[in-house]
Length: 131
Image (cartoon, helix red, strand yellow):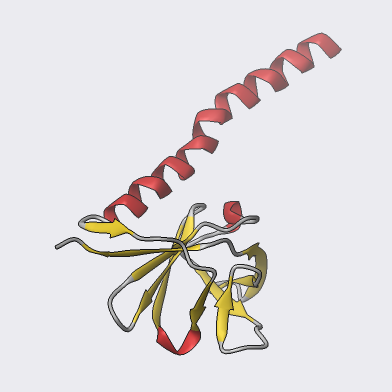
């Protein structure tokens, strides 16, 4: 009986593996679409918050910050990226006018209005329009 249960559980895990991998691949494809026609620059540690015009969450992949100059900064969180959902609201509690790679961003589900997790930010990679 235990052997049958183990085989059944193993089959379920293997069957779910492609479905679990799919959101990440979808996120990478969406990010590539957002960055189309742009060239990456040297990573920076911080962004000035007043320069951030908008943010976009790419499911389970990254956060894209658009600045007033039209540059897109991609942040691939060091931890918690699997929690990212385009339905989330980002809540940041910083003690300075800058958002930095050491900051933690809390995620709140916009429909349920509940805390949904957090991400620990990484470097910000700028993407500017190609000439």
